[in-house]
Image 1 (cartoon, rainbow, N blue to C red):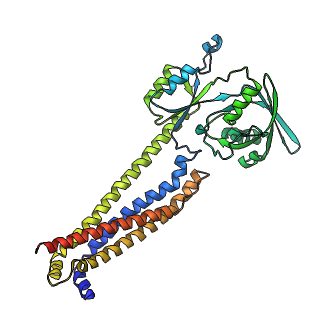
Image 2 (cartoon, one colour; image 1 turned 60 degrees about the horizontal axis):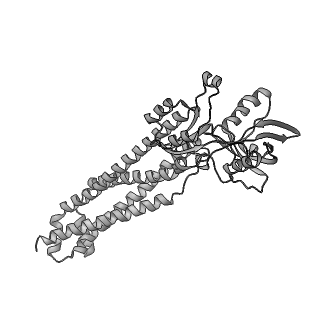
Image 3 (cartoon, one colour; image 1 turned 180 degrees about the horizontal axis):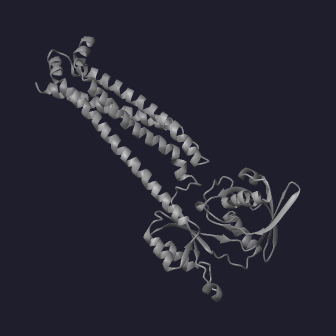
Length: 399
């Protein structure tokens, strides 16, 4: 009896309509799963500590002029100036560079040779750093001090100094293995420490040590000197905000290098990616609507057959079962095809991500699979309810 029922209901099915239904939902689901997988894969680029896609960071300094130099104008920021800037609506977060109030003499030994130089230290709050902070801890009882260098310093040595002097180039990993002997001298004391370079910063053009270390050494070595910031780092949501340029011009502040331009480009790229995701979600929603519409059209064409079967004694569950099985099969084909398309797309964009982002690590495929299964279950339930209600509405005509 079930075989006869299936044959009656499957006769005159429009194969092209079913194919259109499958294709529309295949591409719709593929877009959704692709967006989920792409977001999972590129999320470290957006949220990682060394990501250039994080909200814009701008380093501020006071403008140095000839007149200011001759008159001895201060280049440090006062507390009033910092408070005024922090209250501006375009500022999300504001940090200050804390300078070391002591001298730093560094000695590096390698291959029987020693290099010595005077240098300086600064510190910024950890939330403004663009590097991995797993090794960024300071222990007052330890002689070891973690150091962050600007990446430009390493590039200048490798591609400028080393090449002109016939010296070997060095990698980041090799620099991190070299110990730096530090002699810290202030107005009240002298301290010997050993430093290690733990990371290289792309954004911050200074030699950084942990904030706790700077505070501790300033208090210990030069307690009679106040550490006043000559630079500020500002986090903004929209670097292209006209109010930022107006404020900087009004108070004669400058930005270091291309901080504002780089942040503005990152903001634009975030906006473009968000727009693409929104368009993908809209297309997916329309595809799901086509799915439900296709089911109703299919049922509408079978109204007479369904009516006759109900009149001769078949229950609504029996009549609806072939349509349930058909939609389950189609939804399963859509899910499988969408997953294959996403996997194929991944093989194309993963190498590109690896080339653009040296520390890129793709995420697992499991979240995308779970989202696909959830969508499959959700859509199947909608199909089940729609088919059952449609068959029931045909039967209620005779009541």
